Image 1 (cartoon, rainbow, N blue to C red):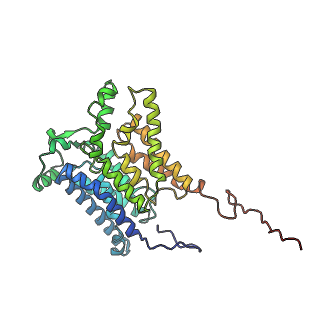
Image 2: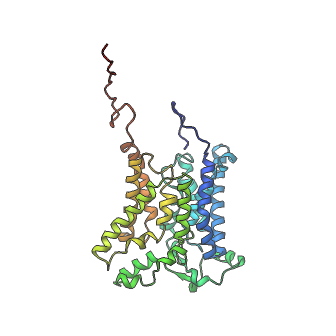
Length: 357
């Protein structure tokens, strides 16, 4: 986004970076409100702390670098990074987890590379990955919406945030973590998935990250972005195809050992990634063919890591790996320049045939 101005021709548009960020936030609102409704005040407090940490970290970095602070913060990119990071955290995680994740996302993944438009990796996914490998216990403590249906007040939310641990009576495992554990114990897949109900995934009434539970709200927000032409359908469809095709083939070959494609798609952060994370302008390829390869590769890596990796969820790792391949895809899969061959050599000049007199 911050590329230097090149020679003409230029494409003019009234859509600014700030307007795009505002539309993405608006699209995230249904899934976020669903998370607040399901998980109560602790989820709201964690979201607030994470967003504020990202904004404050960006302001400090800009101030230290001698750059203008207010114009950059006004574009909303730091707030959006914090918002996406909060959506990927356990809803009752301690406050310091959100603060550390926000600092890692902004400082390590964004400002070190020069700010918005210059980063190689998705900042929110860098923050989540650092937290996951550094604090695996806190990052895998989920709460069941069914067990907290009685609600929590603000005082309880502050207490949970300060102490950082949910009460044992309210903890539960996500579907991906539960299935991986049960398969490791030799339990058949049918027995491990006996409690899985697709309608719970659509409504969000299941353990999981703050913004990953309600598939219906996430898809509605994603389609809103498509309708407003903020994103295209190429990367979401490619990602879902890359995840679901190998899952469906493996499940058909060995239904007792591999999860079905629908369970993969409706679990974890697959849908959030397809519409809101993989479609990041800066860290995804710009050419159509490169976008297909990028999206299919991210989906396939997600399935591979979920199936054979050490962690039950593989979205963040898959996105970061394909982010690393994005510069190569932009170079290799770029479209042909008008008047030149695919390799860049100029086409032979052809003279127009003048009619005979």
